[in-house]
Image (cartoon, rainbow, N blue to C red):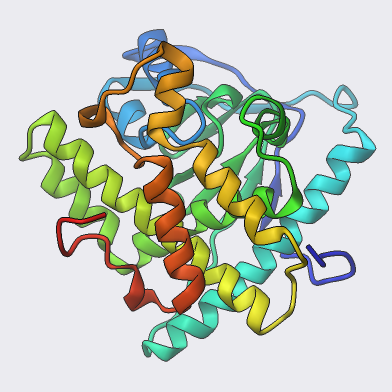
Length: 285
């Protein structure tokens, strides 16, 4: 991916080295345990954390105690470039809809973090919080993506960010709220099915960004698309369940199968349009 020397977003909030002074509130540690079940691209952590309370506290800076490695600093710069490029893409697409794109913040953290959706630990992986319009990521996740899930490469890393930005787009369009409202009236299996459609749409929106990053700004290099497709496949619900417990339960899917995730990313990549990402119409995903 041709990212060096390009504009970096000013919307990066660096909380690395900060720790949350915690005290139990509401569901306490049980909520955190439930949230940890949603590792990586599992259930929306805002749903889990808000169901049973959170860990309350204020972030405190451990002065001089956090020294990022050169590789981590390179990743931080990379993330800022990808975020800037998503801004360019979505500003243009929202203008086509006669709308205005509101840029989200991206929070870099290490270990744990307090968001408007509650307390979260790095083991949960990257997530988007609609309560404060921020994407949260501990850069150590990229090592897990490479080593644990077999999805290396800078464009695989970019896909992760673009997927979470896709959730921000859904929030701006009012889609996330509609899904959460509908889920309250449904069974667990039916609510999970709606979550799958929401997540696949975020994958499709990631593909839309990749379309414009390639066609308009020539960011992509040979092999980049394969890296993103590999990442999407690596974090499919079927593959993760097979790895973690040896069998697959489709009714419990919240993000979609590997095949579904790659299919919708490819659709967004091919069409480059918001309208092409309607995962809520029709039965075939």
